[in-house]
Image (cartoon, helix red, strand yellow):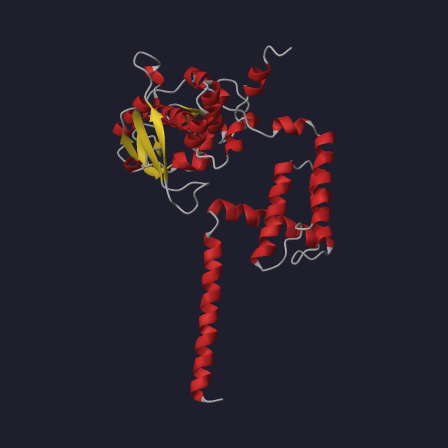
Length: 338
């Protein structure tokens, strides 16, 4: 082999290595951070289960995955969690160029049988699986404290309900994403769960009719918050500055009185939803980060807004997803039939 051919071979090997690294980077970048975390979480659980039983996790035998799902179902895991476990195991295999363990008719039939058995023996899960929507009337009864923290929380809940934005989207709103329109406000969403490529989308915030519910108008409240908050992000954290007091017997003696340049994250949004839900008697287990979004879709459909317009506002890819929130449609259709 000549020196020239050796050099060419080395270049080819390096190119293949670069291509491999690039391929892995592109695959890694196809998922959002939360998706990657969930995948690794469920995969780690499966690996630990296999190691405890002397089973091989990669490549896993289809029967191993079925036994794992059966075992997890016996520990009261919900159907949605089991589906996430199955998805993570299949995804890791596919990333390694292997066949997904559950991708054959026999295994699919076994898993279908498992879910049917779960529905028969744990029917309450069918009704407990979804978090309850928050209604606009509930938001109007909430007691928001005076000051900047109350203003921020009120704006967050009203905006979340009015737009159907996800909690991660609410946390990411910046002032330069907001523009005034003839009807109120328009908010740009640079990236979302259903828009991982970052093509961008918008949602409209409609101003309350004059003389009606001005105290709970999302447009007015957001505009007040924009004026009070000097920072780039709309929803930032708060801190008590130069105030006496502190904590006595677990009670905060003075409210936060200053915004700080640290945006809320999705968990912060969720904590605010739970805090005000508890205030009006809602159970924490009944609420989730999705409660505002579900409340928006349900309310619009109950007001008989055209489902196509609701689908656009919610940015649902599938019309069937929008219809899941049409909770009263069947009852209205059957009314007077008997």
